[in-house]
Amino acid sequence: MEVSVKSEIDVDIHPGYPVSWQAAAFNGILRGTARPLSAVLLRHTAGMALASRLIGLGQWVPGRLPPEASTVRARLNGCSGEWVRGGAGLDETKVLLYFHGGAYFICSPATHRPITWRLSAAARRPVIALDYRQGPVHSLSESLSDALGAYECLLDRGFAAKDVLLAGDSAGGHLTLATLLALRDRGLPLPSAAICLSPWTDLSDGCRRDNRWLDPMLPAGRVDWLARQWTAGLDCRDPLVSPVYGDYTGIPPLMIVTGSTEILRNEGRRVALSARENGVPVTYEEWRRMPHVFPILADVVPEARIFFRHVARFLRAVEERAGGSDTAAA
Image (cartoon, rainbow, N blue to C red; front, side):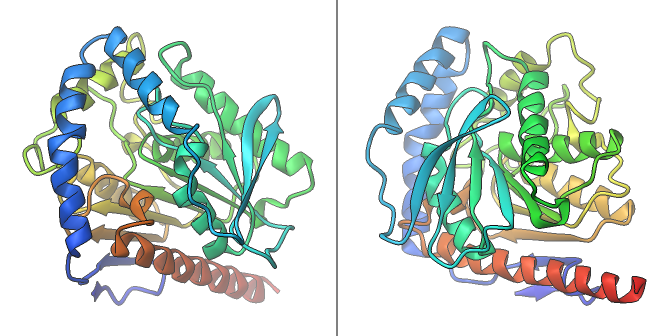
């Protein structure tokens, strides 16, 4: 593992764990299934609708949760979601607000339970996974409105901003960053930190070339096509549309995680570099040969389970930094 010497929280980490046979096998499965299916379906709205229905069926298949984990349906400011608890003895005065991925048109809190219950256990607090509005019926601004409304609802329910974490994967990582920028620009109190897994941060008209042939899951042309669907009529370089162009001054510490071969790797890396230039402590982790949003494979891939130890380390560093700041202020 290579770690810079800046600090415990402002680091680049390239985990040196051997690539497991499970991860290698899943890369092969994804290359033979998800990638060609995406290439076929993500060409027109009818294909998107079919993909959404297929993925939607998965949420009715009972997921494997450990006995200590639980889920409860919830509503936040008119938006549905679910409370996820990864065990007993959690600090109920704290919360993690999670935005699932799915390219803004598929998936739900139910599909992402392999991530959310483990995040709850690692953060030692309940997770509220938001079922925000998605395309093609709804716009990016409506998704962001749901995210902001949910955050403000948590504050209204008595959670202090310092006791709130944000997290999300892929499109949910995009929503996490856009939410942070919007909260900052509106002068609202900010959460203590945020975690972005394989964030989709650039929806502009640039052509993706890095890892174009290496990504086992996402065809670059289909990602570009999806970006055009969601940004029609919008300024693609607006930071709330493409957070890679944001000024991150004043944003709390970030943890940004990517796989070395995924098509979105450089988008996460660019946000990490930009945020550091704006004075934000960033833990950037790049995992060798891990697919897009690999933590969702934690039931079967050992590296994905190990990742949540890194989350716990990052959050300890955030707490230590906050404690040091409070002491200095006193």
